[in-house]
Image (tube, rainbow, N blue to C red; front, side, top):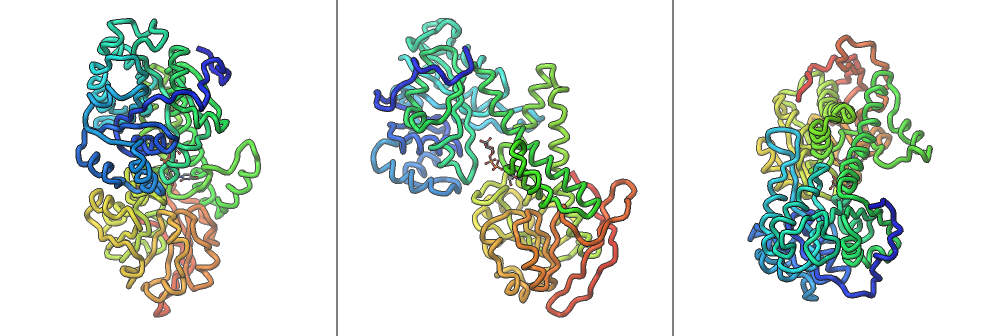
Length: 507
Ligand code: UGA
């Protein structure tokens, strides 16, 4: 099949008959997709094997934090267009188009993707598909997965009556399409209702037509549709996340170089961003990327490339991962250097646990990883996050938590900002300065106005930004920093000597 957006003959006008949709898996992606498709006017039935999740969703409760989603869930439950079930029989009977949205996490024993949830969902659904329908994979998968699933559907779905998946050319049977998602946590509703593009990996015009009908209201907005084969559709997703990760690690690598010559990575990024060929998005330096997608996707992509014998083509992604992990160590080194090289028994106030703001997700969170590293050095760490505290407590039980800064700021030796929540950017440095023991802030996300904090008497440090002292060449690439004086409410002693950071590389 050609790769184009010109399949007008297969296009379904928004006014045509609407297919009934099901969503399999009601995690982050599935719950968002189900709610948004109902919002677009479709009848949607979503299924999950987790009874408690289905009970909560049916009661209008979203089991995770995502702005706007709970209101839309309740509104669409009220219309009757959106329902939830634990019965696969019910969804098989109901659906014309089945969206498979189950998780594909990193395997516990390696870099590859764990496809067990996906395979289980298909094997459970397929034998129940007795009438023509389209199964649409949305999960992020290694290239080649969809072709295998198409064969499973051909083998197990009664509606296919044993036909070869490759020759089922209309919706007389059960067909497969691959339709990767590109939604960002924190913007999931807007990204689903108004995506940048739709990618349809299909094996027949009939499958394309059914997908166009399922996305008719989105296509009617003028959203570009890329129609392609399964493997290209699978690759678009992993390539997009790899590109984004590469951009972030590129600017963080520049931060490392800036630190060696006391240059300013923020100014560098801004200057680069004016070149339209480069652009400013995903060029924010800091503590690096995390979350449930970028880190595991670049690792799974490498693992798949190795299996395909083209591992060398993606070898650079290992470096991207390493640059990313080094930022976590770098922040710890910066805190240690600012505290005379000693972290043990220092009282540290960590701002942020979520992997990014507007999320309660702490999977592979740089913030929580740094909090963990600091605690392992013997520091007394208190983590503040407006919404991620319950998840963070489960992931990292060994530190203290709070939802507000003021309650826990007393006697802090340093404040370390690791997730750029708006609440933290709006903190009043004068007020906070009255609570802490030492007015030292490390802004690992470049979220604060450094001049404002300095004017309020704080020592403000940010990775990749000038300290005012050009470090001398360092053997073994150990960071050395000359730091400005830190003063506390009691006028604590100034330290502007060049400090050897004692905290070694952690992994
Ligand atoms: C990412 C992609 O952006 C989505 O397009 C994709 O659909 C999703 O993964 C997925 O695969 O499901 P998400 O993980 O929600 O979305 O978060 P991002 O906004 O991409 O941020 C990822 C990480 O990069 C965060 O830790 C963020 O703080 C960090 N980041 C982002 C930077 O450090 N610098 C930047 O300039 C941008």
